[in-house]
Length: 255
Figure 1 (cartoon, rainbow, N blue to C red):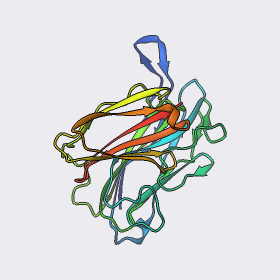
Figure 2 (spheres, helix red, strand yellow; figure 1 turned 45 degrees about the vertical axis):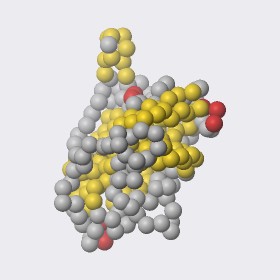
Figure 3 (cartoon, one colour; figure 1 turned 45 degrees about the horizontal axis):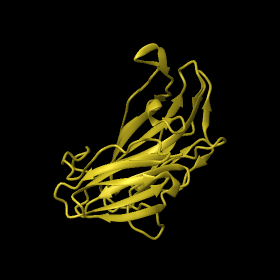
Figure 4 (spheres, one colour; figure 1 turned 120 degrees about the horizontal axis):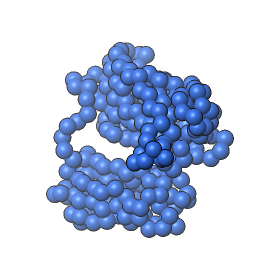
């Protein structure tokens, strides 16, 4: 088993003007890469940990969002205890969240409050290979509610019996533009292009990993519209996946 860590610290960052600044959390020795073998019984559950600290002069109230960068196949998402495939979860603050959940709860009581120079030690990223070799890449973002850009993110590669512990470099067939506007308060649009793919399956999952919408897209280019009135407030993940496994994802917040 090999793990690579990186000391990563972000302080107040000036944006455009000295009068405007962002207070971001800092990650203490976050792990970039985990390498191991499926033959090692200790790798049936891989638990990675790092501390989150506040080196700013402001009090931070933070949630965690887990983004998908790359998945092995099969991947058990949404999680089903009877299904095959690798799966994951994370712990933050008072809870270890259900398998496959995309983000921690954004309500008071579940946020982690960090006063200046305070450190939180509750974060754990759990990955379960379930006998599936390859490279899964997940990103964990620690941020205020509804504002990932104001937070700090860390990408982790989970490599089990992988010939090359790296992200796939093949260009995706499908392309998309960012969903706009965000957060979704009325009607927002998500333009896409299939670029020759026969079709793409569009899915939307809520923060608990539950499928809330599914549709097959066959037009070579088009727009997916998200109507805020059709969804309860919260975080969602929209994904387009081709039969060949090419995939793009977009996270959005409904208010």
